[in-house]
Amino acid sequence: MEEQVDARITRQIILDRDYPPALWFLLDEWVLRRPIGGPKVMREQLDHLAAMACHQNVKVQIVPHNAPCTISLTSGFALAELPDAPTTVSIESSGAGEVSAEHELVSLMWDTYDRIRAEALRPGQSLEMIKEARDQWKSKA
Image 1 (cartoon, one colour):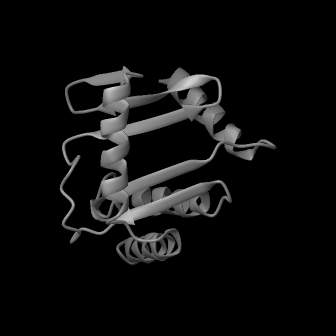
Image 2 (image 1 turned 90 degrees about the horizontal axis):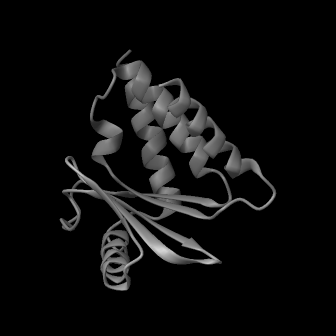
Image 3 (image 1 turned 135 degrees about the vertical axis):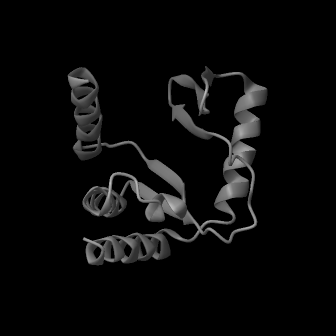
C-alpha cells in the first residue's frame, strides 16, 4: 500500500514540472454526488479535483447526469499519446483491464471519447459544478 501511495505522489509531481503533460478528464456527474468515504472525504477529494482543474495543462469536464450519452458506462478508459510511441489505450472494467496500441481499438476509443465529450460541460462550467458539489458536502458535515 505504501508503494502505491508513493507512486501516486510521484505521478502528481509531474504536473508541476516545467513542461507538464496535457491532461483531459471526462467525469460523470455522479462522481461528485455519490457518497464514497463520507462528507469529509468527498470535500477533500473535490477540493483536490478543483485545484487540479485550475492547472493550465489540465482540463476537467463533467458529463451531466441527464446527458443522453450512455456509451462507455460499463468501463473507464485512458488514452495516452506520446511523441515517440504509438497512441495507447488502457481500458478498465470491474473484472479486468487491458492496455493496447492496436489501431482499431485505439480508434474506437477515440470515437467513444469524442462522443462523451460532446455531451460534457465546458471546463469552466465543470469547475463551477465541482465547487458547488464541494460546498454541498461541506454542509453535510
